[in-house]
Image (cartoon, rainbow, N blue to C red):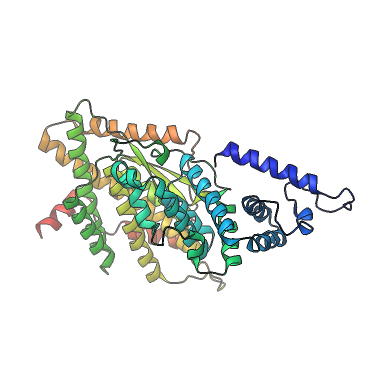
Length: 449
């Protein structure tokens, strides 16, 4: 159901609820005309409000914090014919999910925020609802937007139940509990803001059109992942840094090769794209800083959406692959290092572990960003000599295109600077980020060995 249709239906329901109110209702009762609950208490059992209307009332009351009224509405819904209720609730949820796609959300984004803010039942339900809604575009999506369909696979949004069964029944809960879960989930979904469009939503797909940009070749990506896996598993910090630097060098070299190829193709239609990467608590601000530093080192631009728990990184698709892989790996390495550091207390015996860890991550992010940029600069210098071309202007042009894409999507985005309030944590994080030489000489030495 589109936004205008929902507004017309809501106005209709409010009017019906208001007409039902008793003229003798005592003063001091909650007189919000959108709820209609006073009239429901005495409404006949034939349920003249439709299940969809009752469901939306329950959602609104959930948003306003009225647990009693939510319970009342769910009880009324549970007393109605289950098939009709399940069908109308499913249609309402699927309609709103389709609206979210039009408002810039993608499957992985919705799954992530439900997982962050709600529970396991709501996460399971949103995946079922997305899987059911995707049946409208699944065949076309596999042809023209495999990236979107891959998101459905990653979050487990699969239709693995008989086609004639309601997805709400797949939760395995009692019927009232399933309805309560649906109300809780829908209340969150209806509160989500619009996001910048990073890809065309399913409603804009068309036959014969493919919206996929070049990505890192599997052979190179395999080497990068193998290097990062070794970096994550070693107990020697200097070795981990050298392995990470080697992975960065491979990605930088690929970026140069791609830039040269596209520079030769004067009419290249490849443009920067955006990708949302989850940034979770604890210490989300410090992690977002680290991600921004990694993005900058790889010619990308990052915008952190604090309230939504993700950073949007803009760049060319293969550069985004590098950023995401490096961020994931460096986060693992930093987490292991923090575990080794253990808990911290001040001179009065009070815990300062939180301040220490936040400061550690901020310092590590700043320092690793500098070292990664040094590795990229050394790689560019070496490639410059090999190709006898001026690579810096070519790469700067790509960097400017990524920055322009970020500015267009987030015209009011500003800078943020996480605080580091623990001196020991800052020193330890800087040291961890600076243990090994990430320059090209260290990389060549490692290659020769």
